[in-house]
Image (cartoon, rainbow, N blue to C red):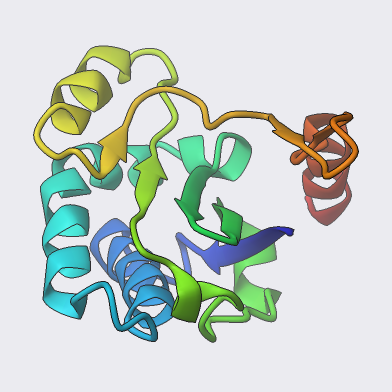
Length: 161
């Protein structure tokens, strides 16, 4: 099931605190799995930090979220900046489904001018990707359905601004 979480960024949090909130959300979600060690998840997000901080600071995650794919977990994680960040009611609890995850990938967006930095950073871990996650999933009947309605996500973001 597709989910989305928003994290308050500047002026409510500095980029480092926002990236830590993202790290904690992902680690708390996957820490429930007996197959994944929290320290491994935290190390992957630490590896992603050189790209994550400018993605947050530049407001790129406001429009281009990170996507966590881990078994049944498929969650976009974006940021809200500006005045809207001050009144955002965050849900920082673990994302449902993490307990059955056996592996995970954090898909980082590649907006200009950070594309090269993000791609180089993603190469540092097999759990990071600079490619978009697969948008389609086969159903039991063999039909394919969209996991992420990007247009609906963009409309939601526009309404929150």
